[in-house]
Amino acid sequence: MSDPIATEAVIIGAGPAGLFQVFELGLLGIKAHVLDSLAAPGGQCTELYPDKPIYDIPAIPVCGAQELVDRLMQQIKPFGAELHLGEEAVELKPTEGGRFRVVTSAGTVFDAGAVVIAAGVGSFQPRRLHVEGAEVHEGRQLHYKVSNAAALHGQRLVIFGGGDSALDWATELAPKAAALTLVHRRAEFRGAPATVARMRALEAAGKLNFIEGVAHALRATETELIAVEIKCADGSLQWLEADQLLVFFGLAPKLGPVGEWGLDIDKRAIKVDTEKFQSNIPGVFAVGDINTYPGKKKLILSGFHEAALAAFAVQHHLYPAKKQFLQYTTTSPAMQKRLGVAAS
Image (cartoon, rainbow, N blue to C red; front, side):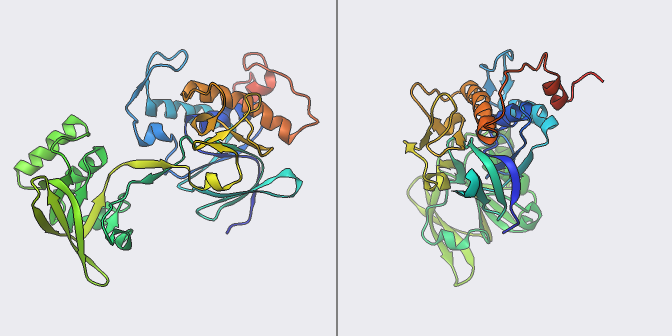
């Protein structure tokens, strides 16, 4: 555990709503730290559909999901928010004086005046290989992401999946592996057509093998995985010797630790009011897809609106004696100074 980091606000979630929350708090002079279990900001936009076109952002006829995230990151630069990526918030507890103790999976501890939960549909966890004994080999010979590609060179690899991640790594590693087999339950793939074409070309050249099927069993010694059995589409069984298994079945959202924090939850979403977007715990707010209220619509646009109102509520919670004024970025010298656009 680290020494607590004192901060005005902690934002849990670095998707569009969480990033825009940084902006709205920043306009009011409130600094925030941002946590996300994913390794990059953007939430679903970055992790699941970075190339998906979005058409309902005001004044932007169309932009890619990753482009939207990139624009939001540019927009929050003036406020110097610290991002703690690859760190899941695992603990949130009220402390004396109305503050909160927030602890991450990496042992980072925050002493926060307010908390805004912008966790989307929850933290994303990899869909796992459901074969008996698989969990024993996780992190050693069974991987749900590639942390060190060079360590896989010269190895006998079996890759499971039919999306972009599986195809990208299959085409990247096939020329460098001792042997590589791609396994997918269907002959059709969800990946980009150009990547599928490259995979088929490598298959035709004998650089990789493709099997239509699913994992059926593992063979291992007491300490080492040595082979995986594939149940093929025709019902036959085939053993493949393997040094490493790479599994890319996508990510599944889970509410995770959020459900253990004493929040009023309805159908995996945090109940909030529509004035402050505050939860049943004073000082804990929720914006974006993680919240629910009468008439809730799960739109990025709605999350932006919620973040704007929540920012004023956070300011009032932190500084109840401070008078609030609605200021405009076009005319407010204070806001323009915070944005770094004030005239010299």
